[in-house]
Structures are given as structure tokens and as C-alpha cells.
Length: 138
Image (cartoon, helix red, strand yellow):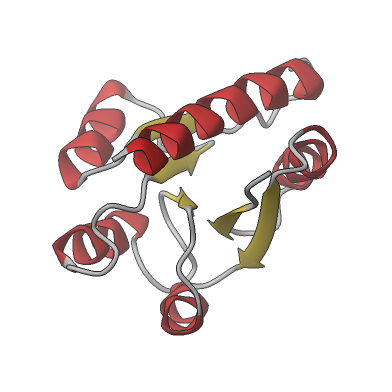
């Protein structure tokens, strides 16, 4: 069974931590590597080739969309599916901007306690595996 690496670039949100914990339990084929800043993200890409990237729309030191633009112009990483996430930038224009920059998917991170994190995480895991399988088939 193949193992896939998800590189997650985003801040420390309790809902994101819950989601990633669920993904680790329910998707044993996915290994998660976490970074919080853009500089760490660029450094990680010098050491590894992730199967997919989960990218915060706005990192503390760089716009996630600026990073996305750079990676899509890269010959080495332009085929890596990048799923953009945000709990703040969720307007249709924000989503469109992410897709125009090359995002494979836009994930709205649930920040309220009303959301069922387990169901949301299951949907996220399915979306992630869809993009990974699509990439692997190419």
C-alpha cells in the first residue's frame, strides 16, 4: 500500500488540529508534515516532494496565494495538488482567486463549535484522496 505525504502550511487553529488528528487516524496512507510559515514551507520543499499540499490562504509571513503562484510556475512542483484552506477568506471572490492561482480545491475550515468536525474531516479526507489519486494516475 502506497504512503502519501500531505504538507500542511497553516497556523495553529484548534479546528485544524482536530481535522489533522482525524485524518491521521482515518487515512493511514497519509503522512502529515506541518509547517506554520511560508519560509518553513519553502525550506521543506527543498528536502521533500509532497504528494499534496494543504495551504492556508494567508500565512503569517506570506500570502498563500503568492506561494501558490510560485509553486505553479515551478517545473518540479507544478503538478502537486494544492488545496487552499481558510476560515476567514471565504467569499466567492476569495475562492475564485484561489482557483485562478491554481488551487485544486478550496477548503473552508470550520471555526464554530456547531460544526461536526468528524463529518467535515471525513469529507476533507475524501476530497484529498480524490486529488491524490488523480495526480497518481497522471
